[in-house]
Length: 134
Image: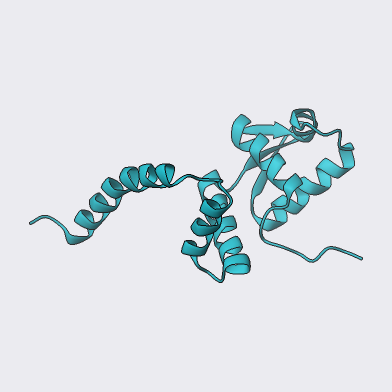
């Protein structure tokens, strides 16, 4: 049975995107060589076509080779994946996600305090820009 179409990235697609984000531009052979697992050439090319259909990858023709590059910045893909996960698994609640991270000891209360401290200045600057000069 075929897997349903998803706009989010699968594990393999994420690995390919990591390679493209790191290198900038790669041929399919270079993508395959950069992956830890030993995927068949046709599998990599199929995944690249799927990523292109999802809008994550673009290619250009150089001679006989297709050269692929990420069409979506890493931070945008991360935001999209996080929104999808929050919606599907946490009812849209960021608080539930953070609570799960704390309960599973993936993040400590001290780390959370550090994140809060480092994030506060950015939030303040953003609100000052929205309000405009005094």
